[in-house]
Length: 525
Image 1 (cartoon, rainbow, N blue to C red):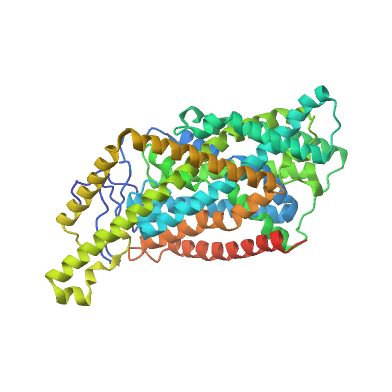
Image 2: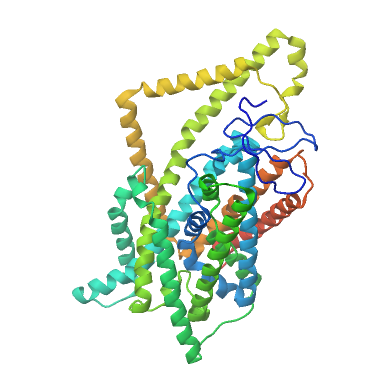
């Protein structure tokens, strides 16, 4: 039973649910009984002073997180799918993302998980948390690589406009490619102080700069599209030419709406976090970002037509002054965003070492417990402890009652580890600083090589989105929600069935899109 009293009652999600908020306490063991009421564990608590975001700021924070560099490839998805199917896929991406964000927040409310990784651990244990950490590291590598491609594509023509009259050289594709690689390397050197920072508090307003620059660029694109419609030169189609084009393009809007690693943080900062208000924030952010993203894709496709580039800015003349302001704003935003993405990517990489060490220590401790149990009660140990079977939530919600002695032993072990870590002194600090710099250098070097080798940003987004985005955005949230709801009251309701449907559709989509991407990369001439 909880050691702290229950606090304020929360708003019920359905008429049949019984909700109680219990604050920051460990999740209590719940038996598999359809008549047992669910319990909400808000982390932080409902009235915690750290909850300062009202509806409008929370909604805008999530919108600013969604709108980023991926939106520059949305017009290509329109070109590949045609106007009608692109509209359908955009709506489908919005609806599925909205639902997956809500069930992810529901997992957090039911378990007290404070992050995406913690939600995975609570549902399926440390093994899944480790797998997701590795997946996150690889995923962020692709995102940084794509951002480097965008930085090169955006800033190379701007720098050429400045230096070409001075150097008096003629433009050629080979020279521009080499020059673009040099520009990218120079920009990486310039932003290296941001790439090495452990705390990017100074860049906390970058998301607002990104939203503003994308909005200005969208208005400029709308003006150019209006001019093209007036001249009668619009060349668009309604339907795709092939299924392979659809499978290539669909991961792009999936990636464009991804904000799953941030939604639990937004939920944790929301004032009066009732389910209704959480739903208002998610629905509002999806609606606003959907309108902006769809408008961006539509206007870009109307201008580019069949020649729409993977980065829509490449479809406009480099000297177009109407687009230039938005181009510069996007360039600055993506430069700073690449530094912000490098931070969690590096932390994921550095977390793998202690993670494996922790798993090893956990196995050693568990082995010691089993040996002690076998020696004290040979018959019981021989047949196995039925109480060790996992409950509805794996390592967190179980059907067992762990002894206080075991819990104290685990706490003492953790405290001993912390003491040993603190006692290593300056030598360990120097080693940590060296690993910090080395890991940053390796990440940037790998992403730079990938950026200069990639044929375009659309290819990077497709590789990144065909499998990893489906897993992060849809498959894992569905599985975590299904596991958390297993054996609970209302387990057969419509939301659980919707989670199963989202899981099945996402697995099929991931397989099809991944197969098509591999075929396009390695077998298509």
